[in-house]
Image (cartoon, rainbow, N blue to C red):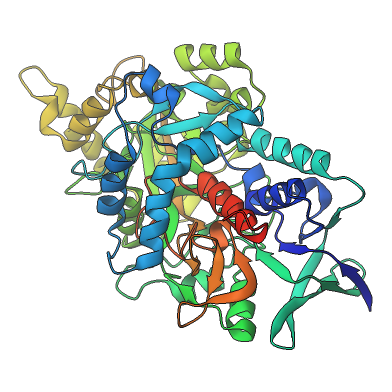
Length: 536
């Protein structure tokens, strides 16, 4: 068996693993980075992600007149995430995040040449205002793909004298100990079948969460929450929890909060899937009517995005059938329809500010037409009756009664009749509340009847719950050291990013303020290397 020797073995080539490798190389360490994917996919899920970051007390917030602080953010975080005060390490990581997201993520990234878009968005406000009390969602200019590629370039630039070894298409099968101490791992080349022994006194697990494996998702789904019979996969397929269980079984690591997940309520199949079951997560239009399988509006409280994603997922999961419908018109779609991720946001990904501004102001006809061409779940028709026929044809059913669909739309539109008060509808109230913030006003239609003349044609999008991120993981302390059942560090073993539940085995609790994931990868990775290098 071939052998390799290094000071640090990093398992997983996503953003957390790459940042750990970069910082370790800058600290003079010899690094072996093992990744299961092909060289062009180094970066993992971060290559596909959108690039939103929840950051606290940034210069951009101050420039926009947003008053934020670690104290305000922590209150929002603990209230929305429903963290248990006795759950010490998630609590401490939550505190670390709000205190250090600006200097250790924002400022550090700016120093690496990463910039942010000029607007700060306001997401996850909470259904009753219990979420983000101020806007703090910053968008990386160039998307997460640009960020990740910059980190990869910096990692290679930090290499000197051949101190970095990157092994692609390798899967770790065993974590090894010698004389009671961590000694390295054994990996198999999934192309050739050859094994290699990787000697290192320090291992950093950066393997992502469990949500790429629907077997693991279903096995860990909380018993008191509805689980749909069918889901799409928006996670990385190699994020299957395998290394979580190896660390637990072989080294005594502790997996916590495995049932807490950050899924999305409105996915649809990728027209050109990268792997089986691959789904895209659309950002549901605030002005669309969210319907059940029969074409009736889900209620009594309507489903509206941007306030509580966790609640939306539970409502979708409890429906009679595993799909719902977004009903809208062309007027709404060109202003509000969006898909999360770098792939379908080329203006941001490719830093085309002029084109981005034009599409924001005049409507993103390009994306709407693209989905009309590419996705069988994206239906367009001039009449509601015709749309109902297409909806039934797609599902091979007679679920949608055209008369019932028409009645659903008529009831909503009646709020805009002369003498009526549109704000009697909860969805309209939420839209008007969102539009008070300028960036949301740019991307959200002024409330109007769905059957408004000239606003057509009508659009129906079939949506399913899509898995995304794990909120739980291996329990770690503030130095990213993996803890055993007695909360004692396992000598030489570290865990970062999603594999660590973004810190402590579950720093977000039950809900994320959204945008806490990429910064969580950076914070935990940098903390690990500071500890390894003896700087913390």
